[in-house]
Length: 297
Ligand code: ZN
Image (cartoon, rainbow, N blue to C red; front, side, top):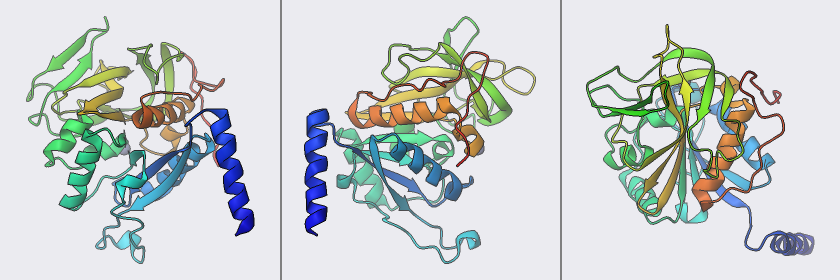
C-alpha cells in the first residue's frame, strides 16, 4: 500500500513537471455489439491509444444477451459513468442504449464536458435517435434519409439533397487515396496533402443532417466499383460546445493497422477531448504512393 502511494505521488509530480495539467486523458471505449468483429478490433484500439502514452482506456461493453456468439459474456462497465471520462470512443453498432444513458451522453457532449469519437460502423447505429444523427453529422443510411456530401476532382464540395445519388454503401474495397482538405487543423497538420490508406472498405454516400460538419480529408473512390468522387473520410462535428471526431475508416484490423488510421485516431481522440493535439505524426506515415501499416501484434 505504502509503495503504491509513493509511485502515485511520483507520477503526479513527474506529469505536472512535464506539462502543467497534461495528465493522461481518460477514454471509455464503447463496444459489445457490432456487425464487425468488435472483440478483435477493440483490443487493438485500446492498445494503440494506450501505447501513445496520452490515454488510459476502459471498456464499456454492452452484450446482446440473445446473440449466441457471445453466450456467457457479461456486460462490463455499462452504462458507464460519463463523469469519469474525457472522451468516448464508439466501436458500437447494435441495439438501442437505455434512454437515460442517451440523455446523459447528449447532455455531457453538448455542454462540452466530454468528447466523442466515431469509428467506422459506429455510424451505422441509432438511425432513429435524432440527436445522434446530429452528433455524427452523417452515417450509414438510406438515400431518402438525408443529405450527402461529396467532393469533385476540382476539390469543390457538393451537397446533394436527400433522395439523390445512392444509398450508403462500400462499393469500393481496397487501398485508397486520402486527400487532406484542411491542412491547418490540429488533427491533419503536418500530414502529406495526399496519402494512401491501406486496404479498407470505403464508405460512400454517407447520409445525415450534415450540420456543423468540417471535413478534414476525403477518400477517393475510384470509378468502376467506386463512386468516382471523393467521399468524406476524416471529419469533425461541433455539437453544442462538444467536439466530435468521425472517421468511417477501420472496417477490420487490416484497415486499422494503417499508420495513417492510427495517427488519425490518436490525434482525433486527443482533439475531441481537449481541442488540441500534442501527438506527433510518426516518421513511417504513408505517402502519396505508398501505404504503411503497423506490424501485427
Ligand atoms: Zn465494415
